[in-house]
Image (cartoon, rainbow, N blue to C red; front, side, top):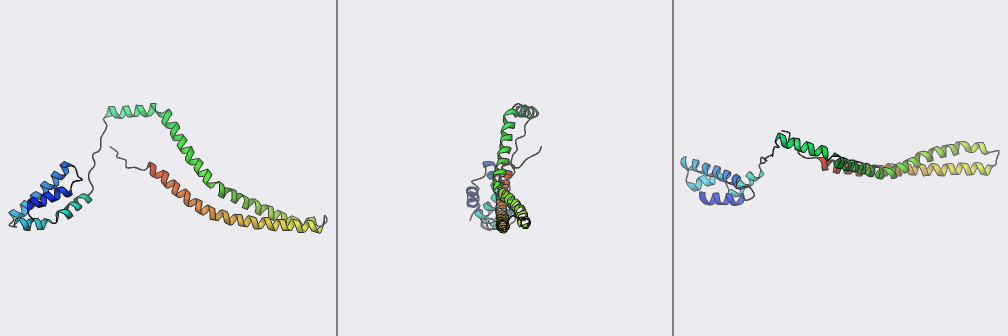
Length: 195
């Protein structure tokens, strides 16, 4: 492979870069090949020493590029600040609406585990009162004692079942909450350049 073919192939493989960057890299590799030729290598050996143009282009494209950042003048910054202050009634209310919608989403997500958990605690308390209070009904009749005790056992079982359901649901809802929070945070994450 000769130098002209190498440089043409390199330019084609660097098609995604800007014209200036392509010219910079082609000039660089042209100079490297010329240096090898000056050191006594033949043109083919110099090109072979540089490497395959496809591999060289892939290595170039993998390297991070410098991005040009547009810097505002002082008057531009003042104008932007003025617009932000004037637009606060609009964007402030929209921001507040967004925050309250996110908060509403959290409340709706956690309503079901809160309800089952509340029933578990209230059912446990009611069953203990019913079981402990059933012997005091002997003077009213044995059937009331048995009924009160049975209802206490039933409510105790339902409260334990509700507690188990609460734990299972809370684990799943906790995962959903974490994913939802990460999505909300990712909307606001971006690279900030301070000048």
